[in-house]
Amino acid sequence: MSTKSDVNFSPEDLAAIPQKALLELYTTMLRIRLFEEKIVELYPEQEMKCPVHLCIGQEAIAAGVCRNLKKDDYMVSNHRGHGHGIAKGISMKVLFAEFYGRTTGCSKGKGGSMHIIDTSQGILGTSAIVGGGIPMAVGTGLSSRIKKDKRVSVVFFGDGAFDEGVFYESFNFASLKKLPVVFVCENNFYATNSRQSSRQSSCEIANSARAFGAPGMCVDGNNVVEVYKAADQAVKLARSGGGPSLIEATTYRWKGHVGPDVDYEKGARTEEELIYWMKRCPVKNFEKALREGGIVTGETLDAIPQAIFTELDEALSFAIKSPYPKPEALYEDLYNI
Image (cartoon, rainbow, N blue to C red; front, top):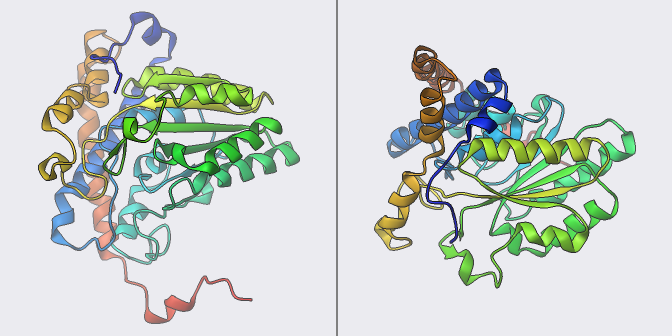
């Protein structure tokens, strides 16, 4: 597992990004973090009946990539998709309502945490099948090329999905047809509890793009500025007709593969490894850089959490007050021949 020991933000990089964008990057990361921490707090009540796959520790990737997207750009995600959805614009209200199985949820209470969708924001759905979202993004990319609508498709997947043949088939086709697709691999070094080094002979995911004549970039996924810059480059290339790119963002999930618990307690990983990565917290380190660099006032930063807490309270109230689906809804929204 090779990674930098510190999250460093150069003054030059920070100065090159508008203050508004820096503040939005921080706010998005904090919204994702507090949203998922609220899930951790409430999940033991067993009112959320669906399993949850949390992205705590990986927030910089969703924020950095989606800040470069337009509202009508397409996004496809995976089972760990809460952060991607929030960064792309889905409402916390419909997410919580979905987790609580209510009709006002994004999938009408039938999909749960792993099936997030909001077509008004370009979020076409998340797939619980490992690697399942990758060909979906290639499909939307092909549609955009045929329609010439200048939309970019982004797909998020993990290092476990990189093991699947569908990645290579999809990336090859996207490169062959110069499709406007950005492939983002969130490499947290584990597929469930299986280490990357135990599954891949060469742990250099980004370099695989060269075999298809496309650019690949490996960035520090805990550094939102690095992610933002890489995504900016990849999105611009895709939108201009230059074809796909592969971004490998190295990161680490703090919680277990599924659920609100930490899995070092079960022997899946070491506590020392978790502590190391918690010190590389993408949210706290970026906040520190903004404060110490005098880029955003402390008063402005201090006001952000309370606004998010208010948003969370409203979202939870909305979800809990919403009705459950009626029994006959089981037969609705089905494809019948």
